[in-house]
Image 1 (cartoon, rainbow, N blue to C red):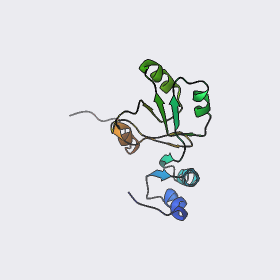
Image 2: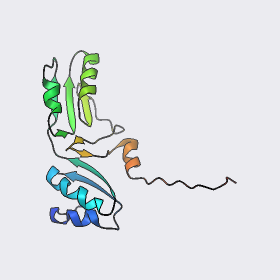
Image 3: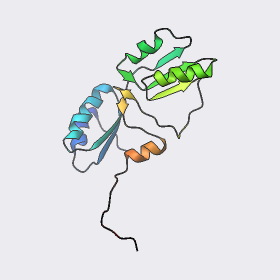
Image 4: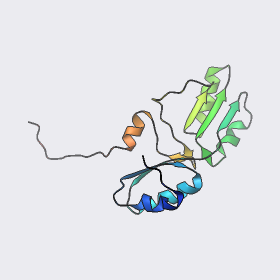
Length: 142
């Protein structure tokens, strides 16, 4: 991991010796990273700022209001009716939806929707984002 100053983000993102940018920071800075990285066709994962919706059931227009924001890092749903909470969670446009404040799960993917970023950290999804897949064709097994 390397810490980069705001003024150096575009240069680092477009540097030909950097294969992937994984960036955590403000939406303003994230907007600089993506087009600069595109110059060298590198993959980018971003965890950007935003507000997290907290839905206390029963909901009326809460789901619609929460989903109308430009951010979608996380949402929180509380209810004594677990099936109802799960239905609401499925409708949320957020990268993580926490139902009834569960313990943190390091195997769960972490990342946002919309302007809260792209890509995922933690669990197998983080490995996938940092791995290049190669097909070797025309090889006979020994």
